[in-house]
Image (cartoon, rainbow, N blue to C red; front, top):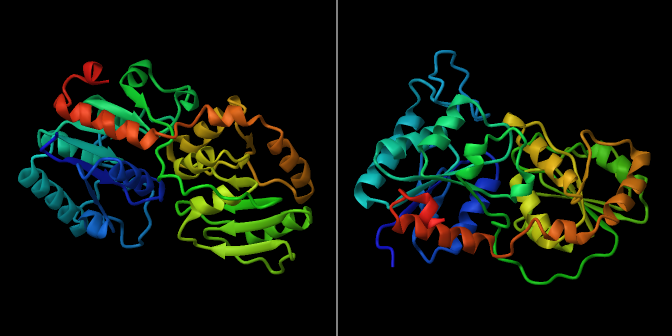
Length: 348
């Protein structure tokens, strides 16, 4: 039994961080404490550190910021408050380990507070100084994806320090009857939203398919009868499980859900810092697990693209997923906590 808690810092840009944290939290038998903005009663709620515009791209734009930091705006009360709250929790709770998903600054704060760090390493070309120093200072790295999706540019020493845990998703929702000929278009929270007019034009070219759209999306000037715009839904994984085929970006959350549900995928990676989604999309394409496009196709292309995605062997998707991903990750964190995070090779 681990008496001392494991802290889990949750970044608030994009839904994937919180979904992953909650999946591990649910598998951790009360041993994990979540820390983040809008966490509420699930853990320690931190002040918002975004700029006044409420936008956040992971960098503060300050030219004199140290190379080992990504986001350290000057004279920001929210930043001061969250740093103080995290430091106070560490002092009072004496955590055995701090999982950071993700922030080079919080990883440095925990390391300075003498807490072993497990850094959640997302995909992409993250060979800048801030990322590499966060990786170097961590006791180990956790990658929430299959090792075959790894970016080519990742250094060998980073790979060797990494444990790969595909399948860190919420517990399965149970079996759902797949709706016949249903295309689900998913627009994530971290992106710019879907183009309703383009989706409507695609749906019009596929009258034998019912198109459902979830997430932020502009309204089309006119919609064909086979298109339903749902907006935000409480349980997107339910929609993924019920779809015949999924269309969306290459964010960790969506990719994990569709691999868990074993659904054919048409992937359109969005522009993200460090080419995160592009790296994942390339890996999916190389593995034969998705049809990957770099831009939204012309309406007339959709019937053939759907058929192409349906012909991809399901076994190529299934091998990239571990149904016990969250449980495996939680158990590994327990072993790391027991080893005080100082001997990754032995705890691994």
